[in-house]
Amino acid sequence: LEDYFDFSDPREIRLKGHRVWIQHVLMPYVREQKSAQEIAAELPSLSMDQVYACLLYYHTHQAEMEDYLHRIEDAVRVPSASVDEGRE
Figure 1: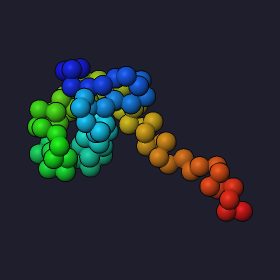
Figure 2 (figure 1 turned 90 degrees about the vertical axis):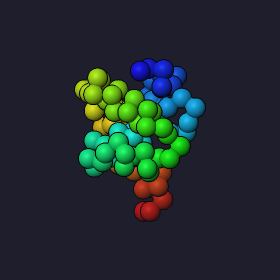
Figure 3 (figure 1 turned 45 degrees about the vertical axis):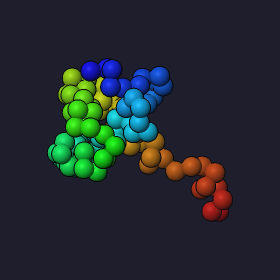
């Protein structure tokens, strides 16, 4: 299963050979309840095997993956201090 992923950066999990990170598959699956087929249609560069590998990785590492997704969501929500300072 791990052969599908690039773990070279501990803060990011990328699909090998793609510019697609695991959260691009997991966010629609977990947060929007999309099916594997719907996700594959939205990410046509991935095979169904790769989509299912992401889902299997999620289910076999669920607590760790939930923490990972929360960290990504939190990073997206945090506004840049320099942008806020320029608005004063």
